[in-house]
Length: 370
Ligand SMILES: Cc1ncc(COP(=O)(O)O)c(C=O)c1O
Image (cartoon, rainbow, N blue to C red; front, side, top):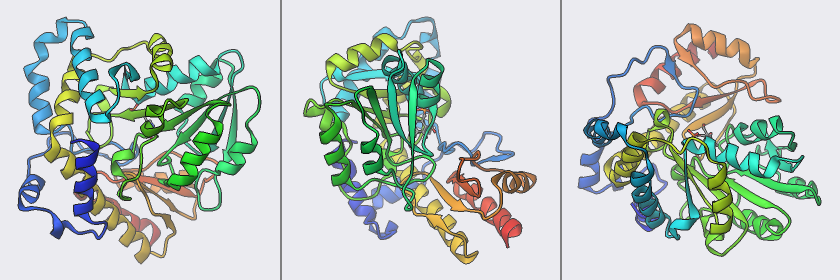
């Protein structure tokens, strides 16, 4: 699905919760068989995976390609780069395939954090790049989120200095699920991309339902000093296969390629290629995610619990009790929730999972918090 198709399709969902607006062919797609055979005990709602995946089409491609496990990934990698370049409408030299987007985050943290490079990031946010860079002596400035639990771009701007190498923006943010105002973000990137590289982690971009919300790939295309990361782990349901990618202008992409170590693997590459073509599964996953979030919101509202409306496949909500105690109580009910996110230690993050998993979560939550 191209970005334009996706936008049109999202409009049919209409932000009205409007499954009724789906075309009959799309409703058919909602019935397609999905992954139901894996062991699901305990119910893992802690890592923002898509438990419907891999899709049936992707599973078939993986098993059909077991033989190429004897080959190095170079050849198949090249055709995946072409497919991604087409999807992102950018030159192939701007694409760096990585072992999950984590590898891209770490490679970037290494390249720019070395020699005491300074990185500015929100707090709390996704840590993979930051903690990795710190092991190589980078200095990370963690800037608290604003009271709406969003990145405080103005406070982050105030931290920029001559040693700043990288500004990490996780949008939508993990663990809060918040989305930055698009104009504020674009203005910020344009104001600071000469002082430092801006990294836009867009792992959850596909779940954004705000119409025409731009990927910062738009700025890469304008020649800006921006790096975007995307992943096949979330909406495409391939977290265990480890494949993602970075998008940056060619001279930056070349540096990052040199720092990538794993180069993913042949089966992940074939899986990713098929996943990009499997529109029915993509739509199914997004539609189920909307339904799951509605169910979670309704339960939290019934219980009078505070939560943050989410642009992702997880919801961050206030437990009002220490997360360690909440996790233990939920675990006793077979539900694994997200890890603690200091300093927000009386909040919890719950991934959407499959609808039946979410129903088990809501039942457990009512017992623990009711
Ligand atoms: C914001 C964010 N970025 C990146 C990742 C890494 O995902 P992966 O390495 O599977 O692509 C995650 C995983 O949860 C995430 O939440």
